[in-house]
Length: 71
Image (cartoon, rainbow, N blue to C red; front, top):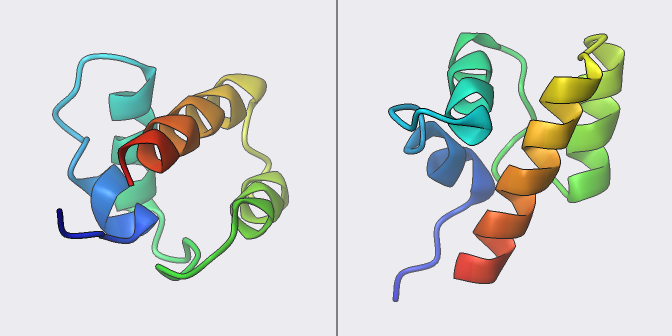
């Protein structure tokens, strides 16, 4: 199994019809999202800095868990 970074993984989820897909589409529009080696804390900090709503943070948490379970 090839391990990919969270950024590439989340961008590949943009066609999903759920909260993770919504989050992935938001990430695609965000030109300043963290780099591929960013930690969970870095992502959360970025989301807070961008004034992300609670639903976006919840979607990130679900996405991060899915990603970590896969890789």
